[in-house]
Amino acid sequence: MRAPMTLTIVTAIVFGLCACAGVEKLTGREPIIDMAGVDPEALEQDMAECEVYADQVEVARQTAAGAATGAVVGGVVGAVFGNGETAARTAGVGATTGGVSGAGGALAERRMVIRNCLVGRGYRVLN
Image (cartoon, rainbow, N blue to C red):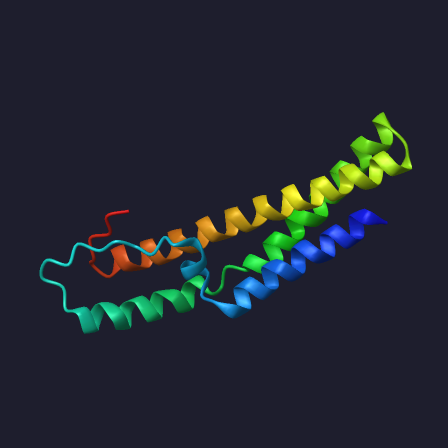
């Protein structure tokens, strides 16, 4: 019974973090823009519009999917190489690992959407 609890905890943490702060603020990786010749107010407006596009990346959903996949794989491996207790433990580890992996991939995708949007609007994005 530990695996479903771990999956629930990982999902709840990610949902909570995403709801409490902007995803880019969580990662600490906002785009670095070469400000030569850039109007800061125009950049602020463009950044806000690009973040709307990035909001289409479903971070929580991808995290939950990664956690669920990890739990299944971990549970199967534990069942094959151990017993029910081993299966529950490995499912929990798999859920946690899969959740972290899913979140990392979604956050990277979100950063790429913002970067591509800004580059498409003529900014020189340095990172």
